[in-house]
Length: 114
Image 1 (cartoon, rainbow, N blue to C red):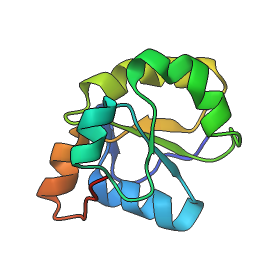
Image 2 (image 1 turned 180 degrees about the horizontal axis):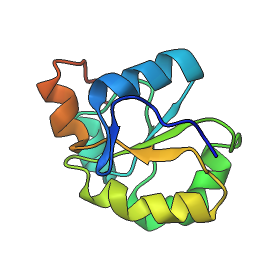
Image 3 (image 1 turned 90 degrees about the horizontal axis):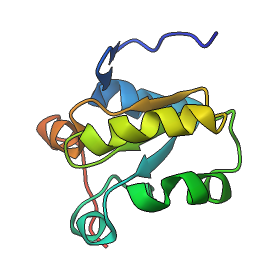
Image 4 (image 1 turned 180 degrees about the vertical axis):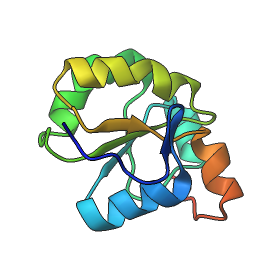
């Protein structure tokens, strides 16, 4: 059983809690947005795996299943759908960024463009 991260809710991880996971535990951010959406705005260092390719590409893009995984999309809906797939593939520490990129922006956290 993994420890519960402060700032995690039933709907996912808060933006400040996600920053802590990234900084303290080397969490990997996986953005499941389509490629054009990802190019417009994404969290720095995020890997882009669109939902349609997620199950096939996640194991090749994120080899260490022991690292925390933060799934993100524009509003959190698609990321929530991929959470079960990530867990099925053995990424037990996978979580969704609650509210998606929208909540990241609202927390005044930086975004990058491709």
